Length: 207
Image (cartoon, rainbow, N blue to C red; front, side):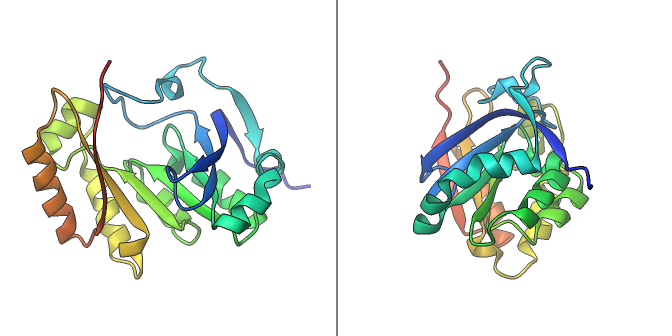
């Protein structure tokens, strides 16, 4: 009997509307990330004791299929986030082979991963939700601790494929103490040159 892929999760959140893709979605959040963002919204994903549960693909399928009717009625499905879900590309690929092909599969990602992960997920993902932070490498590195080279190159590679103008949505945050509105405008112009047409601009609210 084939051994199923396993992955550590920080949470599974059901019945989400209009925040993780079209329709009703279930968010599956993985533990682990390639970045160390100063204002991480899910800091548990980086904590050694932050794993809620380790689960295999079959167990996840049973967990999320209870909302099958909602997914089919609204065009929704499963959104993988985290942490960085692309690090679990083998897990997600195996899950997609098992899941109802009518479910939408969405990814919330920073894209700062090896290209092989993105290539593996390309055939399965309906909506790429890319948190770009900022296209200025100095700002990005100051905020995340990493260069944005992989992020930009992976996004460029994604946008070179047919149909990506409607499949890729880029989040452009205004990050207090790190970037300005002018930086957001410049990032948007640079990303538009790559072919990105869908943007989500917002302000981080730091408490």
